[in-house]
Image (tube, rainbow, N blue to C red; front, side):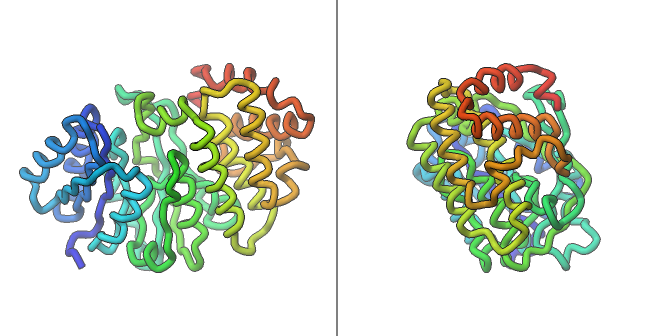
Length: 339
C-alpha cells in the first residue's frame, strides 16, 4: 500500500489545451505534495498531451504515474485504473477541470474519515475564464433523495477497497458513465457516506470537451448505450422506497439525458424520450402519473424540477415533440445557466 493518502485518476484524451491548469491545481493543493499521487492515463491522444504529462512526471517523480495506451475510452480507462490504485483513497479529475486549492484537504480532513467509504462535496460550474455560473451543493442528508442526488463521479473521495469489493465501476458508454458510477457507489450495499456543504471542484463549461461533443452529435448508437445503462441501473436497484427511486430517475437522469443533448430534431427528441420513459418506468408509478411539479425535492434546482415535470405531462399527453423547442429556448438563456 502506498504511503500517500489519495490517488487522483485522470484519463487524458487530446487535452493539451487544458492539462496544465488541471495539473497545476493539484500541485498547488494546500495539503502538500506528500499526500497525493496522480495516475494520468494518456488514452491514445494525437496532440501534445503525452509530452505534457511526462514533463510533470519528470519534475515530480514521486507524484505522477503516467500510463500510455491505445484509445479505450474514459469509462474503461477509469475502471482499469481503479484496480491499479495502491492508496487507501482515490478520486478523479477530468482533464479540463480543476480543483480549488483546499479541495483535497477538505475531503481528507473529514473528522470521521475512518467511518465512511465516500466523502462527497459540491461543485462549481465555471466558464473557462473562471467566472462561476453557479455553485451546487448536494443536500446534507445521507438518506432519502439526498443519497441519490449527488450524480457526479469526480466530486467524491472513495475508499479504494470498498469500490473493488462492491464492484463499483463506470458503465462503458459514450457519455453518462459518471451517473452510473455515482449511482452504484451511493447505493452499493453498506456504503457509508458523508456529504459536505462546500463546493471545491470546478467543472468547466468547455464546449469542445469530449462529452460536450457527444451531446451535440448524439447518435442512435450512443442513445442506445445510454438507455441500456439506465435499464441496468433500474434492474439492479435495491429494495428502497419506490417513490425515492421514481424521484431519482426522473429528476436526475431525465435532466441529464433530455436537457443536455442539442442535436436532435423534434421527431428524434420525442422518439428518444419515449425510449427513456420506457426504460425508467419500472422505477415506480410516478414516472408516468406524478409530474412532481408541485412539491419541493431537496437537491434539485427548481428550474430543472419544473422542466422535468412539464416534460412528464407532455409525454403523457403525447405532445413531447412540441415541448422540445420551448425547452431549448429556456436552456440557452443565461438566466437558466445561472440557476
